Image (cartoon, rainbow, N blue to C red):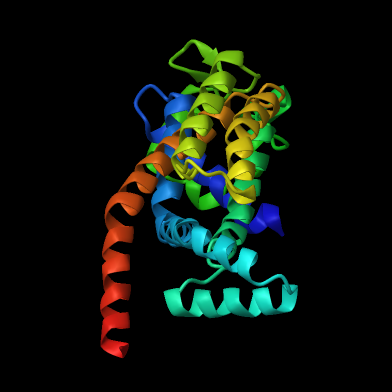
Amino acid sequence: MLNTLITQPFLNLLFVLYTAIPGHDFGLAVILLTVVIRFALYPLAKKQLHSQKAMTAIQPEVNKLKEKYKDPQVFQAKVMELYKEKEVNPYGSCLPLIIQMPFILGLFYVFIKFKDPNFLPLNSDTGIMSQIYPWVKDLGFVKSFLANNTAVDTRFLGLVDLSKPNVYLAVFAGALQFVQSKMLTPKKKEKDAQSNMMSGMTYIFPFLTVFIALSLPAALPIYWSVTTLFAIGQQYLVMHHDVEALEESSERKRSKKS
């Protein structure tokens, strides 16, 4: 089902972009595909960032409640009251992430396919052409491409083969992941348990990104790098503009109630 609903459509979109780009650069097609997906998922990403920002903002108040109420049941009740008062959904950042997971898995399987040399020939019924929709094959520029090429060239700018692991792209993806994680880390002098955990994740996630990317086709760290760059821009806009507007709106609502 994942292949039919997500992986195959993404593969066809990638193929259309690849055949339509002058020079048929696979890396540029991956970048364009990533941008298209990020724009499509922007509302979900925005909602997730709103929730993360709001949860971080009220964490000091949660810590005070934890010190004041030692009974776990009373503490949980007071925390839920705080969430209601501040109009914060504690699960608001989870649902958008869950919805995005099938897309991430679908793209993972798309790029993994290009690791197999037998998948690249265009004159085989068992390779990539077995996954391309008939109506895509009938597009004029696709027909022209198929008439003049025998296989998909997975190189980026004619230099980096994105069907194989690449250490430089893996490290670059990890570095961008570090920047993004750093942006989400609370800047507080007094560290609590959650702050310490988030600080640890700031270094663990980039390391895991590099470690995983080193064993996968370089198309994946290309995708992850562009996705992270996009996310950094979204985080800046949401956290410096959209959240401020949201907080002002919430403050006006509370003023009216009082």
